[in-house]
Every structure is written in C-alpha cells, then in structure tokens.
Image (cartoon, rainbow, N blue to C red; front, side, top):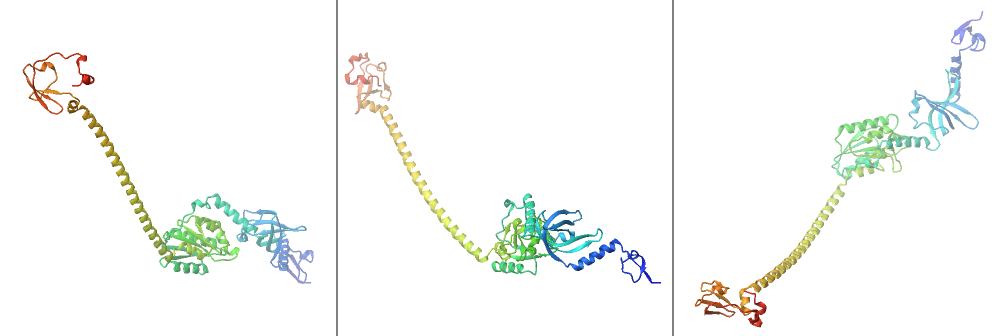
Length: 414
C-alpha cells in the first residue's frame, strides 16, 4: 500500500501525488491565492506603468483604491496608507499618471491588483496640486497676507538658524554673518531638512526657538536639491509653525528659482542661505559709512536750519521795524491832530483873532458886564500884552448891526 501524507492541502493523500492533482489532493482557496500571489510577484519585479486614474476612493483607514486604464485594458490598484505619506496629493479623476509598483494578488479575495509605492502625475501635476491646496488653506487663514509681514531688526544681536548642522547652508550663513559683523551671535538649532520625519523635526525646532525667546531673528532653510528634497518646507505644519513665530523670520530654501510655502509665510524670503545672512546681518563697514553719512546730513541740516532761522529773524526784524515806523507815524499824526484841536481851542488863539480877555488882579476872568463895577481896576489881556484898565460901569451890548463887520462871524465866541 502506497505511503500517505497529510498537509494543509486537505485530507491525507499519497506521498507521490502533487497538491491539487486529484480530488484527494485538492488545496484550499487560500493556498491557491497565496500561490498565485507568489507566482505573480516572482514574475513581475517592481515596474513603472502609465495610465489614467479612474474610480478613485480614499478609505477611512488611509488606503487609496483606484484603477489605471488605457484604451484597451485596466488594472485595479492600491496604495497602502504607509505609502500615501510619500505622495504629495491624491490624484484627480482622469489624471494621467505614472505609477511604480508590483503586480500581486490579494489572497483574501483572489483579486489581481497593482500595489503602488510611488505615484507621479504627468509633468508636476500632483506636486502643483498639493502646493496649491496648501497655499489656499494658508491664504484663507490670513497667513499669506502682506500686512502681517514684520520688518527685520536693523541690528540683531542673536540669530537662530534652523537647518541641518552638516549642510552647506549653515556654513554659508556663518561665513557671511562673520564677514559682515563679528558681534552677531549665530545659534544653530539642528533639524532634519529632507526625507521621512523632516517636517516633524522642523516643527520641533521652531517650537524650541519660540520657547527659548532669546533670539532677535530666525532663519530657516537649506541648500538646493530636488523637488523631493525640498518638500518638507512645503509642509503645512511647518508653515503654520513658522507663521506662529514670535520673532521676525527669513526663509531661505534652495536656490533662487526655488519657491516654497515657507517662503510665502515668512516675513522675508531670501533667494539663498547666503542672501539670508546678508539680509539679517548688517555690514559693519556699511553701518559705519551709514553713520558717517547720517552725521554729514545732520550737520548740513543744522546749517540749513540755522540759515533759515537767521533769515526768519531778519524778516521779523524788518517787519518789526516797519511796523514800529508805521505806529510812530500814526501816533505822530494823531498827536498833530490833537495839537491842532488844542491850538484851535487855546485862549491865545482867540486873542490872536482880535479878541481880548478881562481879568481881575486875582486872575479871575470877567466875562459878564454885571461883574464890572464902576471904578473897578482890571487887566485887559490882548494878543501882544496886558493893559491896565478901570471900569466906568456896564452898558448894554449893541445889536448885531452895531458889531464891527470883521468880528460879526465870531461874535458868539468867548
């Protein structure tokens, strides 16, 4: 009797029978799909394929499911949640993409599928989409508003630099800063600037600087690299942590042509790390030249102000002199008018017009006929002297016709 064996393929079968070669050697469905998986994966190493995305679904567990198709066929695809973190954004329906992955079989259902580990849209579609989505969210929250940008301090004493401690960017920043001013202290806050964990490392470094609160300025950045190398500086978490910095910030990521999300959020964007150091650290030589120029401007301004003051005082002196002369002239005219009025009212002026004034020896004026007594001595004041006279007694005044013609017009004067 032939020897029999037992296995996971079913009941005991003859030892020389191949699994699945007879009803007695039948295998389980799981064994079949697992074997198919091993065969398919062995036959197809990881490859790149091109197709159009259709039926995309993002599962709540983080996995992405979709199909790739061309004009003649389609294949089901899956991107496990562990791989989605390396893809900048979800693909859009109908987007033309290239995907790197491996053909496999899902043993549970026996489905043939393409397990994707990397996904790229034609051109830079996914990267651009991810950047635009992040930018719109930050813009909606006001973090890109130019009004919130702060000026850099003119003379910082301590600058915090977040970058890789082994990168060329740090060496460039230190070299430029030391060349411009030996008084500025550069404090390095090391962080991972590319690859897995870089965004978290940058956020931690930003949090350290914020809690330290003893720097006047912050520079964050790195040297040039590929789009993937610079992608940590497009992470929304890094951008929001940078926007929350209590001190002014400078972003210096990559080369001049590279523009990252941190460049948009920072108070100032520098084209390169070296340019960031030039913006942050004032040149000692330039500062001295500026102070000298300011001193000359102050002297020149003081001279101009002195000249304007002297000119103004001269104008005031001339105006005061003119005003004084006009005042004196007005006072002199007024005095002349008053003198004329006094002259017109003077008794001597009356005597000069041919009249006389009778006065007693005591100096009292005698203006009425009843004041004279016959035989009374009195003085008669005339224009050119005094005549001693004696009254013979009063008599009535003659009528108007009896007055001398030359004196009729002044008969009512005293």
